Length: 252
Length: 383
Image (tube, rainbow over all chains, first blue to last red; front, side):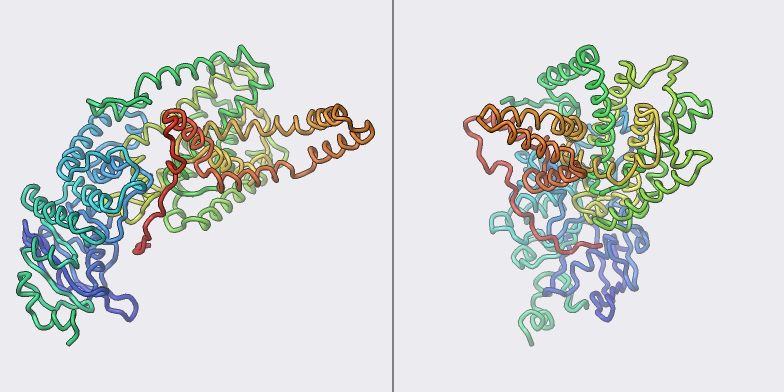
């Protein structure tokens, strides 16, 4: 069985089929990209995977385990982290606090211990901080530790979101349009980081992206989606040459 | 301005970040300990009320400031704490048992109130908590075998292991101070550990919090329970301080006063609870002064400035009529809330930080330092 499998998953909002019997599987250590025109159902698939939506039908498997019924807040503990298309950071907290929230699924201490701040809590905090510092180092976020998110520029927030996801030590990371709103230089950085996330950290990447340069540069495989249905999948070149994909983007 | 050179993760964890903290908080503690020996009994009594209001303020800051869940039902939690103390004491149970018992019972009730918070937010949650407060008020009035109904209930002098602590004594002052310091420490400890960060995460983005592995239901209920338990403890102290409790003391107006504590003080930090409590408790003496002294003062000032004596007398009457007008307190409260929300949403503590920064950066302070850019549109709220 594949590392991560989506099996004939559908999502229906009333009469609208946002996702229509989509199946694909992602292998360990792969960078897998979902592309498609606006409203194709890409982010809906992400929301299904992170269990923010309940699928109308179909199943999700992660490391051979059925996660279709797992509540949203336990997904992170299984090793799936995500970023959001429209940055969902904790605005009125420092970047450090944001990244430490990313460590939440590794919390071992109990409420009463935290109230008294016992030595065990301090030890756990220092361990969390050490892990966070590794991510800060990895993504070059050193200047922003004590800064409030509300005061950070858009490009940095985008990276902080990736950092927060990485802090949970995921096995699979879902990146929802990592390059949206970034300039050319920042997009370049992002493409290097995405490859580093896979190569250096060994995290499998599943992403939604519109910027085809970035897609071509980093993806191993691409899935094209339109009106909730799979159009084509394969290497970036194969998918871009596929007549249905060209029709979807340019009109038949 | 001080730049702290960091070489150790402990430096970010510890509460007193550098030697300046030791000096300022040490001095504050010394002043607080010296207070009972320096001030008269009226002022000491007011300070005890400041402590009690500040405990409730800390509780509300945990719930509203950190977790983002509004509540207009904290007078009810205070009432539950107070009545638990009153009832258990009348059954001959000792203070060291009924004090924690009141916290636990109020906390349990708070957890129950927290459940609607899983589905409600904003104004709807406020309405639900108001409804809860009315229910509690009604129960207190009707459950006569325990609460003595509308007649009210005497609360005997606090008896600490055979040692009586009268409500005007220095010992009572220190007890309240101790509970306040304890609850502040508890709040700060929470803030620097995963639970506090989870609260903040829920406040800022529920969707992201969920995806980061935070169980929204669990943490919202925890937040309500902690907040209620702290308020329950304040309720015990309140009961002993008043020495008489009746349902009409715990009305909606009291809940609004508590909300005002954190609006005026600033809900983003624990300091706000204390500053707001000082402000709210001191409004009363200020109003008394307004009623008694200001008309006389104004009239004599007017005479000095050459006003005819009978005109000055009229002025005095008008001023004292305004000062003793019914509903003046409510009007002032309403005006204050509006002014603070419009002009200083970060409250007194926010203002204090700005003033402090002004002097630290002098002459380089920029007016726009605290201007926040508009946040990006959050579509995709998966509610």
